Amino acid sequence: MTTEQQETPVQAPLFIVRQPIFDRSANVWAHELLYRGEAADLSPNAATPALLRQVVNDGGSAYENPLKKTWTMVSMSCDALRECSEGLGFNGTHAVALTTPASDGEAPARAVGSIKGHGSQVVLDNAVPRDMFASLRTHADTIRLSLNGLTPREVILFRQKMKDFPGTLLAADIGTWEDYQGTRALGFDYFQGPFFTRPLIVGDQKLGASGMAKLQLLRELNAPEIDMGRLADVIATDVSLSYRLLRYINSAAFGLPNQIKSIQQAVSLLGLHEIRRWSMVILMNDLDATPKGEELAYMALQRARFLEQMAATMPVLTRPGDELFLLGLFSRLDALLSHDMKMVLEDIPLDAAVKQALCGQRDSEMGDMLDILDAVETADWSTANGLLAKYKACFTTAATQYLKASSWASKQVANIG
Image (cartoon, rainbow, N blue to C red; front, side):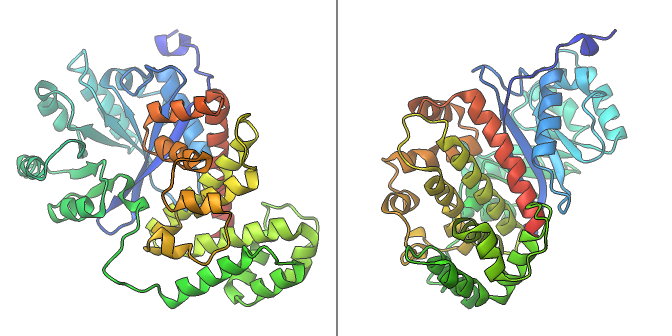
């Protein structure tokens, strides 16, 4: 029996976070699965083969969208790669990011050969010490450079050093659209970081007619005085929304025994709260049809579901779950519309605490909820753990709910699309 077969599988819940990686055409090339367990020292460099299998299996199932096929990237040490390259189920849809040198200098070549034999790719992190980087570089399809702490001059020097590298280059930890434009101009091939979650505001660009119409629908859907009849009328004014909502309600996601044939029937059967919620979900998904927009809409759904489910597990939280759902759902609205959040929310009748947090006032419960989301999505685990502890949230529960929210959001996107 091998060491790998004897190893006890990891069962503890993990925070598994998906970060998109875009290509030069702004399409999603890959998603990296970042992970953290309750143990403070858990990291890709210390990950065991059993834990990596859990990341690949749990992350793959939670984030699966049959309509979109991209690479799935997982970071690991060279030694972990050597021990589990045959047992991780790499099947030509994975990219393996190597983060540390190997204790056995010959081992990576053998493991990489096995992975490439299954059609997968190898990404080499530039942070690998120089004495090992040169030998590992010959096996890499892509080299990744983190922009954290680097000056523009240092990024330019790196690009010059890589001019003879025959593979592709990935710029990671891109925080702004300016950094994205700069690395793209330097010839990088792939781009990763929170830049795409921020609105790309170009001068005094006006919101287009389609965006204005959808904002008007969001305003009316959130009107406090709306009743079932008015809700049905609001939805009926938008042919696309009506069609997509009926198709969505009649999908397997709802599992209704009889087909719903009208908006009025849908409202009567499912109720004001549910129809209003799913109308907003569909509108959010329609705001930006680009790959960036699809990713943002997915993130908004995931955020909404996670906060809603966590509300009942935070004993000192005073805000209800439905408010947290709206908070998460609207938290990417500025990036989806490429406009300032204050302008976007100006006439939408939201609770004052929700609107203030969305507009940047973070010294509140609602602000803390957004900070938790931001910390988790950027793998700032110290901040995330501190805020979860502040609200007496169990790490295990939070990790489990996040993975469930990821799976739920993937299913909604697949059914809406």
